[in-house]
Length: 303
Length: 224
Image (tube, rainbow over all chains, first blue to last red):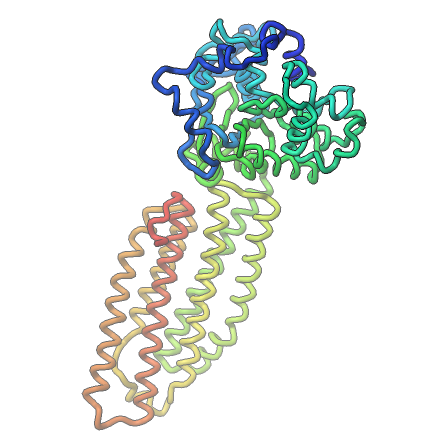
């Protein structure tokens, strides 16, 4: 399911109160950390991806999600490590996309959706009343299955979120940096005024990634970001995801198990009924999972 | 069950590896007999038959590569294919060792047969190592982790027997220092080589057990 609403559109619609000052330190999210762990996260940021000890950036505790009376997720517990790639796999209807959308409260946009339990970002429950979902989505960006650039120039697509934020930085410089980080700069540097819609599918998806990272998020959620792309464009996105994980936390939902195996550090396996059955190092999941149901699913003996 | 074709290919691979092991063990038993009885014809058959096993080995190796490339196996399936890939190499080496024994048997001077020296029966150790291989292959065939663990202990036994046999040959040789002829030296050298080759079969049996244990339980205890 795709709402057709990129993160920044939501930001644009509702963020006036917050973006007026453009001081992120005043948003409740950024500074409300547990008193006992206030400095550990900052310390973790200077570490490289190579360190095995990583901090948890997102933590779910007993998360249930309902669509009206239907339960889509059952008591999910998970700790997502900072600056790593975490993949979520499972059959259709297992709740993996629902979980992804719960992280940055995209489910708020669905009237019948209800989330229970705690979903903490830097220790702060994102469903607390004092959390502004728009500020949250600025820190936790999202990339969708189908590339959805705005019908605007390449430059404006990337600059959009920055302008909405009212950033005082040099916008061109930040556009360039975002396009470089999204591995698109070399292909579009001479045609920044061209419409984003004129790019190929793979380029459009990298443009959407550039748009998501332009506002300097900490987490990028990706919902099947390569499923509409050909193998070459897919490899580029996969390479990019691994590079992004040096700076950002990436959480990716994919139907492609080999893709999860190739690019993720950790893998979460959801199975029918909205249950997170196993979560662990990707090598462990794909070489020797603990649960027979997970083994049956990943080896294709399922059903 | 989904992926039926693939599941059938995996089972066919397992059956083919087991079949290869039966061929190899049979070959090794024949080689021991050729050596024991000085049977040149049997020795020839063992030596010239080795290419069959090589061909089978290459065929199964290709089958493993095809499965890896085309099916992207994971978890238990992956460990099964990885283990099979290693096990066929051990089986092929055992067949090479059988060929060695066949070659030694061809060189036995049959006129001296009655007085063969040294008077040490190594073929019973050879039978014991082949039984280890068969036991390891039963574990592989039936995903039986418990069976694999006894094989390591059996190998300690074989190593000790081989060491004692080797010492006995050398001691006997030293005692006869004045009565040596070329024939005796050849017998001694052949017996020592045979002991060494038999001991290696036991090592391959342990390898097969180790890969099987990894395959069944993801346990690398016997690999190291």
